[in-house]
Length: 378
Ligand code: COS
Image (cartoon, rainbow, N blue to C red; front, side, top):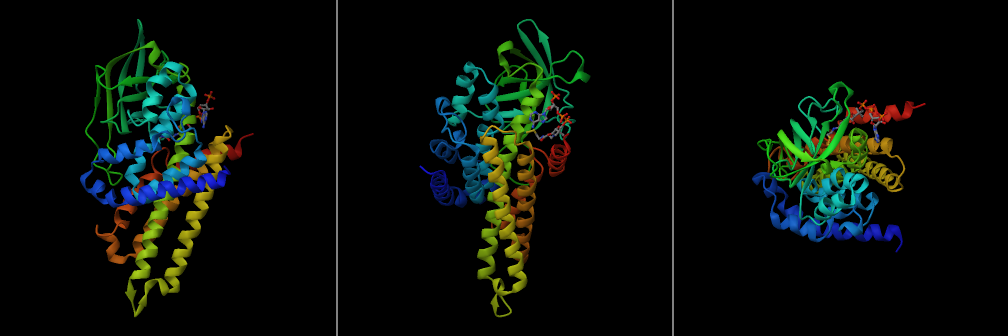
């Protein structure tokens, strides 16, 4: 099947499902801060958690080019829903796929691809946000394994995850900052989750601290190479950023959809407000930005799928698409006037959901640093 045709079929099928089932639930999910189990199971049944994961490990075996279409269409309907498909397809799933042992792939990759388990990526700490290598969580070598102590923060699905990929310092000298990733399973002695954060948006996914107090793990809990976890995390973030960029395109498109609908329906000065040229200039600008973002995201995804370094493309896509989501959502809200500021219209939620995209998986300023570093490389 021709790739463009296949991509179109995927887009149509995800759009149909998302508009029919996710969009009508988005406001309720935001209000109740609970994600319905049936919707999670429906997404799992449609293999959305395993789009980029290999068929032999329960996935669909497609690439990021297809994943960004899936996530865009889901985000266009309900931002919170994307929070349940990003981690298995990007940070957690991709890292296990690339660096896990056969046994780890059977144990962790297969269930996350099928939506039977939830895994999360625990890198950030209270003092290690943008400066990701400034970790203070330490894994001390003991007989038969390691003892981990530390605190992780802003962890997606922190209270609900079945396992956590924890990044910790393993060098004797903490200043040497050698980092290793470990699988820590729910129920491990000394592992607890903090209270869910009270967030501005994306309320259908719980975010919390993860606290590790003398958590013992065996040697085979190491993911990837010992002391080489930082570069592995950075590679994971390359694809994570492409995922967030795709999510941002969907949020921007949702905001534009609402702006078009509202301006065609709202009448002032005896005409539709969409008939005013000033409003049309804004809509034209929004449409252009959304399509430009979509193309940047597609380019990054295609490059990543070719196993080429896509660090700069991923950061450009994330930077542009997320700033676009925020700008377009803000302009769409402006076009709603006071109706944009009340909860009766979806734009109020969409605007809040757009806000986090320029922050998580690396702020816009971190993306600018990465883009410039690549540009100035000798
Ligand atoms: N792919 C593979 N390896 C990478 C990489 C990438 N995209 N980016 C960096 N590395 C490697 C480097 O090659 C280097 O390896 P060596 O030590 O073998 O030379 C190592 O990782 C350290 O890289 P660097 O020197 O660039 O690290 P810095 O401390 O300067 O940090 C930034 C770089 C700021 C880009 C990084 O800390 C970052 O991305 N911060 C944001 C963190 C973030 O996004 N957090 C969100 C929450 S985590 S879900």
